[in-house]
Image (cartoon, rainbow, N blue to C red; front, side, top):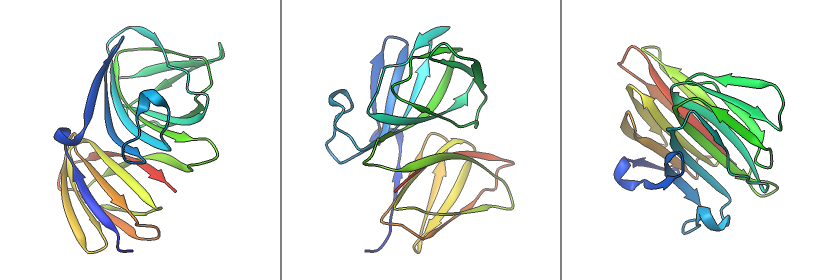
Length: 192
């Protein structure tokens, strides 16, 4: 099957409110899955945290990755030591953890169903030299700042801040990234 590269813009996202701000679902699988019903294999989202302190929703069936897009966030899992995330820092944790956060920010999340979806998340800073990334089956590249061009399987997309490039059926393909901005921050959700 040929790789598919799709541009996702804020018009494609689904935004809902939560007690501490808003959450925007960028993509979910399978199609038609509903976050509230916990029937998804994976989900990529971004949330605004408008409270000084908040508690994460328990998601015991999921592995989670989180980063910040704007602002810093301090996390504490199960009453343990604190960890501070700055924009582009990526942190993995168990969705079953009792997680408390401090700091107002905008975050970026990848949730993977334990035993059914594998993957990771990474931060990429792309400048004039560009970057390359070997794609798993699915990759969502979220442009947190700046803008860039994404090339995969003979297709090219221009992605602006707040937009995403979704590469599907792309296992083993090289994603080529270039930017004319001083620096573009991309957050990549990589899913097998």
